[in-house]
Structure formats: structure tokens, C-alpha cells
Length: 332
Image 1 (cartoon, one colour):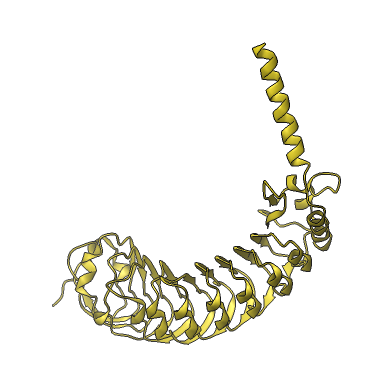
Image 2 (image 1 turned 120 degrees about the vertical axis):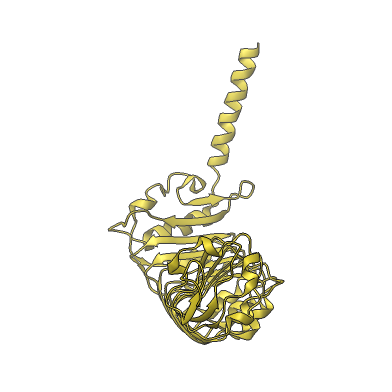
């Protein structure tokens, strides 16, 4: 009897799986097949067979109750010769989509598709390592549930829209490795507190860092390899909880001796700027500092002795005006 019951249970599970996988919203299925066509029917989407349930297709996920498409992640580890085109406008016809990602697709070109503005349930928008171009559009600020906006490693140009600060739930903004120009928007100081993680490195951003950024307390700030100038001391503060700050390879000029450093810092990189003054004594109290670089600046005075500062190599400190003390030669 037990064997029969066990077989019946397994049979029930099998039927349940078939019933679940067989469910597929016909409108979503139609949209996905149009996306496949617009992308030149790439091998990556070979599982998108109109005779099978779309919830079983590679690159998509469905809600287990409604069977509507909630995630579309198209990513390739190797370039495909037949994967080409622009972001299909039909992506905007997946109304329950929460995750949209196009990653490592060098033949994906054109602008960020305006139809994305219709995806009001979107939480993650990740368009990275492609050849999309043009400006970052203002309509992205119309996605009220967006939490992660990653547009790294593309050919985007123009200024960063100040309207992005209107996104009420954004926690991580990555715009690095594009060709963006102009200043960092002053409105970025009005992001929801404590503040989003900001990665804007490897662009052509210029002008001063807005003082309004002193109002937020992000976990991570990376403005490296731009043309930013002037003061950056507003990014620091003894009461802040920031763990990583990278301002290297800019044109920043401020007195480091007057900077109050958060004890939460794990990584601080200020190399290749025009920073002057001395290294603050309080830095020896930063117990978890694992990465540190102030080389190629205009710093003077003795390197504070203690904490973790002597664990870093000479190249952490060299090419300054008159820094001295371990690990550099002794002060005269």
C-alpha cells in the first residue's frame, strides 16, 4: 500500500509540474517572440519556442501565481555573431516586469528605449557592457519602484539628468565607464536618506562636487577618473558611515588636514589630485582600513604613526610635496 501511495504522490507531483510549466500568459509570450525577432533570432534565445510554455524559457522568470513575466535577463559570456539590433520597443509591453537586464552584448546599439518608461513595476534596470549610445533619458525618473540603475560600460554621452534624484526608492546608481560630461547634479543631495551608492567613475565629468552631497551618507562613492575640481571635504564626516570613497585622478584641491574622516572607512583613494595639508591624525582610529592611497598630491608633514597606516607600501604616499615618516624616510 505504501508503495502505491508513494507512486501516486510522485505522479501527482509530475502532473503539478506539467500544469505549472504549461501556464504562460499569451500576451507575454507574443511580446517575447517579438523581442526575439527584433534581436535577429539569436542562438541565446533558442529555447524560446512558440510550441512551449514561455515560463520555461531561458532568460525569463514568471510569477508562480500569476504566471506573468517578472524578469528578463539577456546576458552572454561570449559574443554572438547573430545577436544584433537595438533594445526592442516591445520590452515596454511586459507590464509586470521587475527586472530588465541586457549584459555583455557588444552588438546591442542605439539609444535607451523610451518604451522602458512604461515599466512602472521595474526595480532593476541593468544595461551594461553594450554599445548603446546617446543621452541618459529623463524618462527614467518616471520609474517609481526603481532600486538599481546600472548603465556602466556603454557609450552614453551628455550630462547626467538631475531628474534621477526624483526616484524615491533608488539605492544604487552606476553610470561609470561612459562618456558623460558636465557637472554632477546638485539635486543628488536630495536623494532619499541615508543616500544612494554613487559610481560615476571613468567619465568626463567636470566642475565642482555639489556641496549638497554632504547631506547624504552613502555606503560607496566612486568619482574617480573624471575632471572634477575644487573641494571634496563635504563627502566626509565623523558621523557618516561611508565605507568606500574613491576620488582618484581628478583635479580636486582641498586641505586634507581639516577633513573629518568616518571611522567606518574600509577604502580611501585620493591619488593624482592637488590635495594639500597633512594626513589627519584621526586616521589611525580607522580600524578597518584595508585600502589607502594619497600619492601624487601636495601633502606635507609626518605620516601619523599607529593604526594601519604603516602597513601600506611606500607607493601609497610617494610623489607628495613633503610627506615623511614611516614607511617613507624619517622626518628631518
